[in-house]
Image (cartoon, rainbow, N blue to C red; front, side):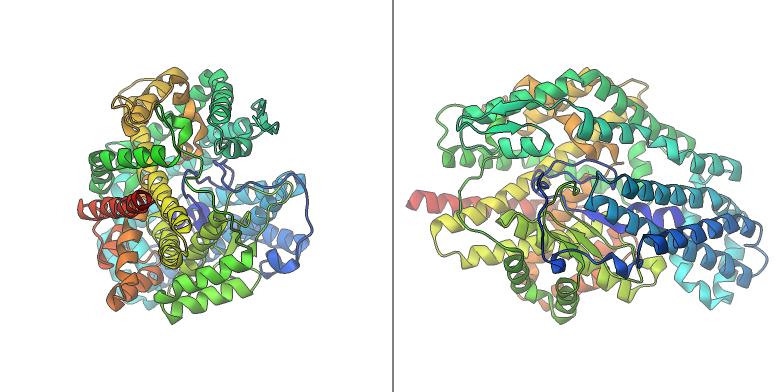
Length: 637
């Protein structure tokens, strides 16, 4: 089928997932590196996005929403027309596609407004209305897949050959034939589509609990500062320079989560049981195979990643030992020693600095790429600074096909902010190139490809600033930042992926998840990845509650894609930095391809086979090389 449900999955909203930062869905929560301020600030208009490019005002948006709602109701009347002729088939799929495009644009406007001020009730209502509209369209076209498949492969191919207008739908229609074994009768598909409003309830409840209702404690640090340990406060406190402060922050923060262990376990069990229900009702062998099926992703990618990362744990442990050395820790290293910066660099990066630095770093990507970048930073695509009520973190929203991408930042004028800026504009230019080269139906790309595009930018930026560093201290800072990105994105996200797989396998075996059981499973992984038994990093049992902090786990086998993406980006960045013109063109072609093919196949065309060990081993070698350079500097000092 033309993947109407798949097409707007996440509305091509891509979230930054860098270092220890988690990526959340539009309604989810996130571990926060850049957190909004509690005080409002007046900023130059050029540092805020211009939503009038989408709709002139809220009234215009609402008029568009009501019109789209009428069109959604009309879609049900197309039932029974697919097989009449090639032309009627084209009329049906074009009509559905156009309504979807309008609904996505409606959603994006409401979502961006809501994220400007999460406490604004009218903004929240608009977003909910848009989400309801999206759910309604799914129910209105639930007949489509069963009816399409009932035509039979022979007739479908005859229609494709007879009607040139169907060409832009061909990939989706071919994919529908592939999905036939998992497409159900029309009445069942309708029930599942309508049930979509309720199957995500556990995620919604978790988000409210984690972000609004947990009773965050206050702690007083050794310098007398009082810190409220909300999620953003924890992100600040865990970087405290005094070890005793970090331990206090960890114990107080995870103690709160521990108090709610049973409730959080019940929510997670409900979520995983819901995934198991979808797996069973659609006749998949496992939840992993179901989750990978839409992208036609070989399970070998997932399992090779986990195998190779486990084989590389000695390299991760080497990093922890290097961290211990640089932090001058005399006794055993603890889990709360992972987050403080290795080097304090007293240097600021304004948004203008971030724009200029990133531009220089991306020059090897060529004129076509830079044209998209320059447009994105001169027009009002981004909302730059933290403000009261603003959504935390950073993301790019690129689903408004006929407009342009939008970028949310919380720029704090530090290097992390500059790196995050580069990351998000990797997504933005990706959308620009894909939307220019592809029709709406084929422009939306997978996370598997999306994160490669954004992490590429971060790596090019990092390599440039390392090369331009004027002092050993500055070089150590940038190299250490690169190491931390590898820890957080390659190793940590793979640990999450292992945990997610274990949760699903537990439920598929007929068992029930409890908070205590989840903490036990997660703690075992935490200790293995951090070398607890080898004396590398000591993990306190309380910290097994960390699983409850990760909103990723309310996504469906999502996190592994960050680890694969940083792997692919590293390989491509190395080639492009060495002025390999073919690699540069392969990368641009990868971005322009959008969703016109399956992501695994697109990546292979770019020269990276993620089902083989080679890319992962190359990334581990990059990590070892960085540590070689850092240790040489330290030895010289």
